[in-house]
Length: 407
Image 1 (cartoon, rainbow, N blue to C red):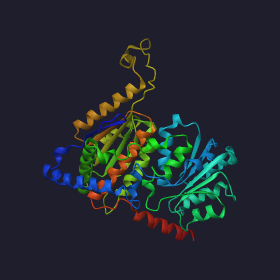
Image 2 (tube, helix red, strand yellow):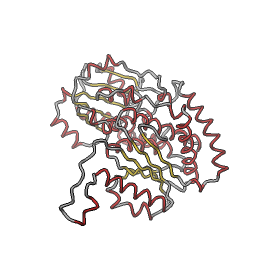
Image 3 (tube, helix red, strand yellow):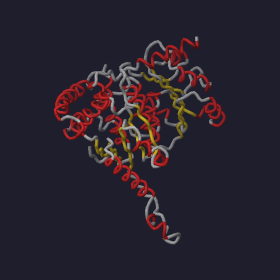
Image 4 (cartoon, one colour):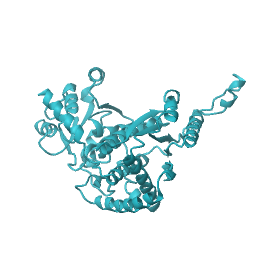
């Protein structure tokens, strides 16, 4: 995959797989590709959100009154908030507002926030598909902002009998409907991610610019299908059970946490699954690299880098010491990329499967392309391995036990 936004280089050691098996799955995944493209037209399908002509459940005119707020608070858990966090971190230089995220139960964080931020001058977005998420409701109540006809609260949840929807009616709060067919981890390009993005001052239409091209354009379908076949084979054979995100781009960290949930919750079923781990590099070269290269051969590596157009100044080491000559006139970006390229050489020599995502642009369409690619690839892997990518039965069990204990 090579576009003006990103380049995907795959090195999955294909010689370890029988060509006959690859060819058999190739025709299967091409058929699946066509089925998914058709499903985009079905409003009751989770992947309908990738339809580039979809109409979102809010009107820009109704949201404009909220753009006056310079402080925004997002309250949610998992897929209800991870996408917005990824958007905020990746496009932070374009965003002129301060955005706070309450994505866990943290008493000290809430106490500090209430002490330092003027609540009346802050916009609160409360997001939960079910409307009954305990952590989200607990954080909302702990902030003590609920008042009748409050003008600085937006609720996004399903339109049904649940706590948040009922609160929006009882207190006459601004309400936006969460799609019933859409699970949280697939919702970033829906109201869940696009409402926060709009209020951050971003162009939400650009996020959806490339959502269908991996299903429609030949060269992009080819790389998606190829990677799906190989990864589904990895999953079925259970030889590689860990995906290590080697992140050389700090602004992509939250995107990788979004990807972590997507992959873990969608594929972690029936005794199968990949454990996605985010590794900050080159820092982790000095703590985990020995294990990565010389430990158990159960890992696939995804390498992320971002082209920094704002090139940092070169190091001037000429007059300091002759021992530092190799660093003279080198930028920090050059040093980091050299470490990345050296690692890739080691992965190749040690025959360790990896792929590299080179990201070239920091804009809405690039991030939207990354979101849509990972969604499609994950769903297709699940379909090829007999997994339902949209449910989370084990998680629901823990939720029921928690509610029972609290009662």
